[in-house]
Image 1 (cartoon, rainbow, N blue to C red):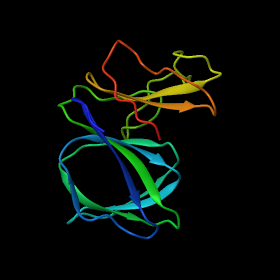
Image 2: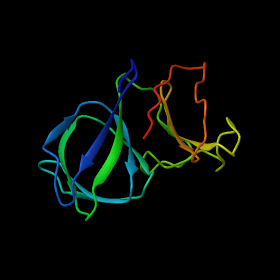
Image 3: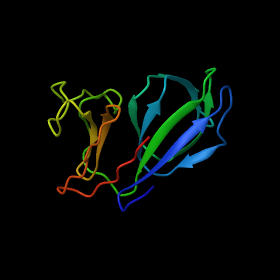
Image 4: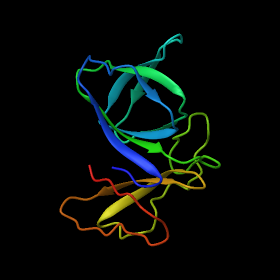
Length: 156
């Protein structure tokens, strides 16, 4: 899925398998689906071992190539949100998406909808882009449209 601002794609790596060496030219945010243990191997650098929780979001600068290896007995899945335009100031919102930067949220869901249908946690923001993780409760209908900005809504 893609609009003028972001490209969104789902990644899945089988247990104890690896991706091919691939290039990230642009900055991106990824949200983990299910708990995961992954190793990121950038040629010429020390490997980075990550333990990721279900729903955890992280930001990464582009401009590198790597192999992602799934070290777990279950599939590694994530949704990657590639930022297609240059971004202004990067800020964490309710969660620590950018490593070593504090989150700037009082710790409550957005008040954009009744709590009976869903929760919306703003996670990451720049001057141009916002990432909000919305969890819709079972058998609920929710209108997520907001006329204040252009949106790309991805259902998982």
